[in-house]
Image 1 (cartoon, rainbow, N blue to C red):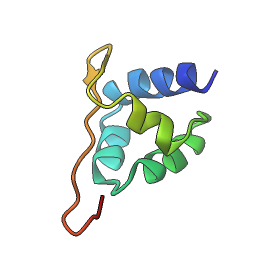
Image 2: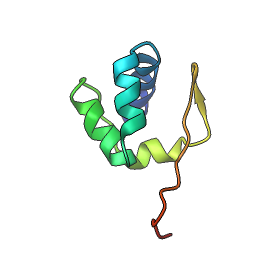
Image 3: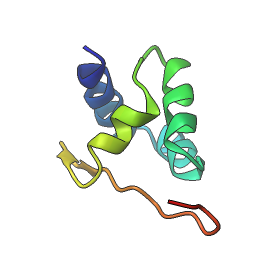
Length: 71
C-alpha cells in the first residue's frame, strides 16, 4: 500500500508548485517522506530511493548525490 501512497504523492506533487519546491529543497529521501506525511501520504525514504530512475506519470524520481555523503 505504501508504494501506492508514494505514487499518489508524486502525482499530486506535479500539479502543486509549492509542494514540488519543498520536495526539491529536501536534502534526503527521509525528509521527503516526512513532508508527505503532512499531506496524508505514508511511505518511507527507502521506498522512495527504490524507485529512483523510474517515471511516475510526469515525474522522474532521481537520487541526488550529496557532496560529503559516504557510500
